[in-house]
Length: 147
Image (cartoon, rainbow, N blue to C red; front, side):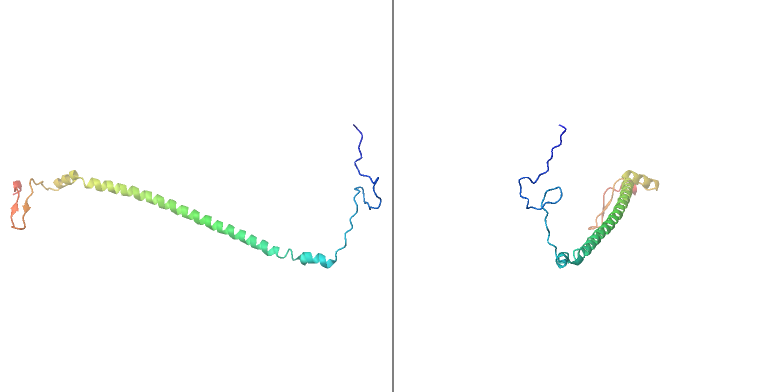
C-alpha cells in the first residue's frame, strides 16, 4: 500500500466564520496585551531572585560547616583510635611483665628453695620447737639437740 493518506482536517461543511492560521487549522488566539506594570508586579522587578541568594548562601554555609565538622570529627576519632591502640599495646606489655613477676614470686616462695638457701648460709634445721609460756615464765617443749 504505497498511497499516502491525507489526515489533515479540512473546512468542508464547517462555518467559514472562524479565523484559521497556518496548516494546523486551529483558530488563532488573540492575547490581550498586558500592561507593563502588571508584568512587573508578578515578578517584583527581580525580587524573586533576591531572596534566593541569601537562602542559597545559607545552605552552602551549612554544607561547608557540616563538612568541616565531619573532618574535625574524623580526625579526632582517628587520634583516639591511635591512643586506644597504644594503650592496648602498653596494657599487653604490663600484663606480660606482671605474669613474669608472679612466676618469680612463686619461685621465691617455694619452701624447698628457702631451706636450701638457709643451709647454704650455715643455718641448721631444728628438730623440735620450744615454747615460752609468758604466764609462768617457763619453757615448754623438748629441748632436743640444740642445747
